[in-house]
Image 1 (spheres, rainbow, N blue to C red):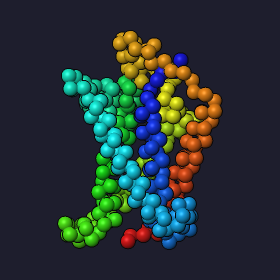
Image 2: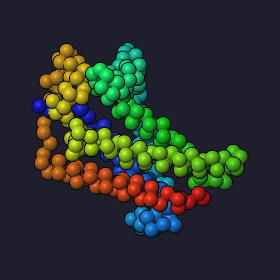
Image 3: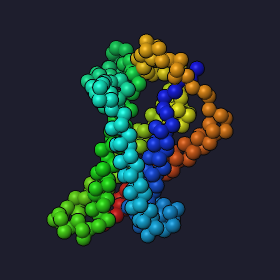
Length: 272
């Protein structure tokens, strides 16, 4: 039996973020490593150095437009009559005390002390994933606009703020790419429960057995609320599964290409 985990809007939002992030990583790292064969090969994919800069800016604008739409989506989902539960309830991605408790239980379980935590719909690492992106995007946007329009920036702020903006933009970009291409990819593809791929964000569904193993409180809550049968989902068509497996692993390969070469050519990062 399959349980519906993500609706179409959530899956399209993830796909949008995935595509824009990969483009931004490729164009941004291409400029960062332009003195190396790695950087030049990345820029070549996007039509050259100048084209990569233009694409990086406009895809950044597109990404922040999507972020704004997401904010509106979140606001509309808040129920004023049930404000606390809609913001801090089990279906919310807002971290709570239980997440710190689950993390502590996981650490103890890893050390052979106690049992693993019983998770609800969202695990603590999923919330961390979400909020890392949520706070990272505005930082990249603000610093990116400052660097794109230095003359306008220095009419409002001191010139030295451009150096700070460049440092923050570069550091956040490297941190985001490293986290996505190592931690997020491992959780989504490599760990035993997910291997060879966590299909939930593409198919929108998850196997009941898997959900009972990883999110037992979520399954129990659905049963108690009488919603389990309503959450049943159809198995995706074979052609669609093949499509998102190819796409998913292509994205994984591109991410690892950037990660590995970024480490190899780290000493050649352009500081200006």
